[in-house]
Image (tube, rainbow, N blue to C red; front, side, top):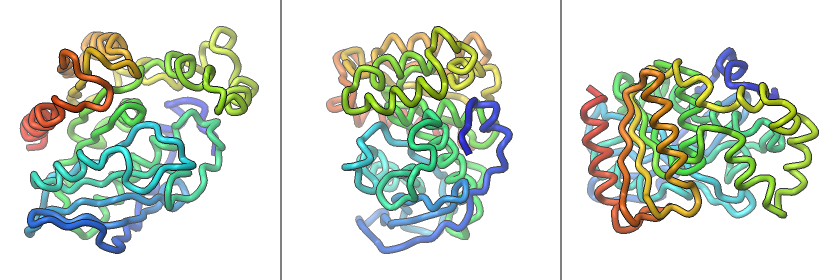
Length: 290
């Protein structure tokens, strides 16, 4: 099914289920990580699951990674640090590979759904975790996304308000789909064919503004019910910090409880300030996952 708007996605019957825990892929004294799969939109999606040692139940996060070419992506890539950090600090953390990535089934839209399928996979990850008989506290669940995954988190919040209790994004893309298309997809020679197919299918932003607004999370910020924490570095040359400043302003205007944390000199990947950003994330989650 090709979703043509966030409201269309919101009307879908989500089918996240069948979380299967496979081989152990990492272990520390405080947590273990496993290869996992679950069902999403009739597809099998793969990922990595961090589980703290102990009985639980534990607060839980679903991780949405940033853009990595699916041709080279390997399972769990993109938020390895965050997954391990959260596992070490007492959180179950499920990293979503997305359809078309690693061991997941191929993306049936071929990229034409403007990553709304990735949003479906993240929503279904939450549902699969709640169905699983593992040490998940169903009443303490959050979304955490980085870069493109931040946009996926915004989409999930507007498509399924009330699904989780809080959300955190790091160096997120714009909440306006046109910004993202014009910055990466249209100018990328390696994705020229995809850009042409998108424009043939959906139209130019100037000619079909209703479609592009319909896939932009900011159009529906008034529907968000969860608190949101945004981390962004001032020296990010991939996702301009101006995007997050605009998003935070629009979220606040829509009545959302939003906090924007800026990091002077920090770049897109977060190096020197990574630990500080995670400590702030933990304090935020502890406050809202109660």
